[in-house]
Image 1 (tube, rainbow, N blue to C red):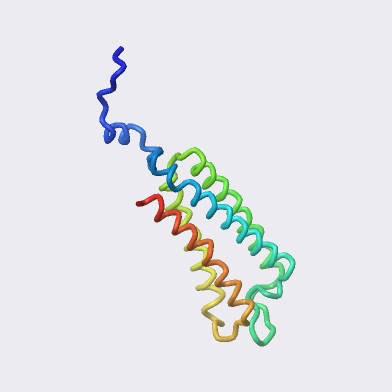
Image 2 (cartoon, rainbow, N blue to C red; image 1 turned 135 degrees about the vertical axis):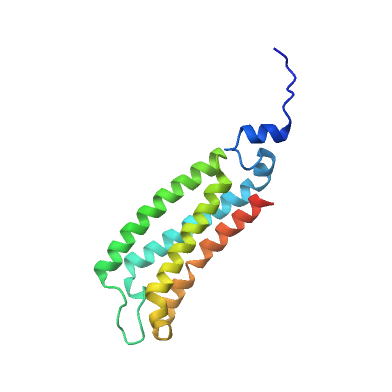
Length: 158
């Protein structure tokens, strides 16, 4: 068997489609993406802690009426934490093994955008003028992880 390969880099990339980000490119951006992933997890943990320990900041209007009942908040929190746990697991596996990372990153962006948009559409648009400043802050707090995910996407697309 010959020791020299006659397979071009383009052919090799087509044969190994799970490696969507070349190892050279991944080694250049790996530290930035890792730091952003850690920051995203910290932001989500802080948000979860705020929701658990200070539920009065979650979608409360100036008239002191809650848009969600405590049961709704706890049910929604359980579903969202489950989704985040699964999503973080898949994202980190994809990042650490460099398998389908570009695709997983796009899927993560789509899911986070959909969750943010659904919350805005269902809960926020109906009472935007009446929300308190902490409630608006909690809504805006969702856009920081989305921005960091988008920066990860831009880094691997370059």
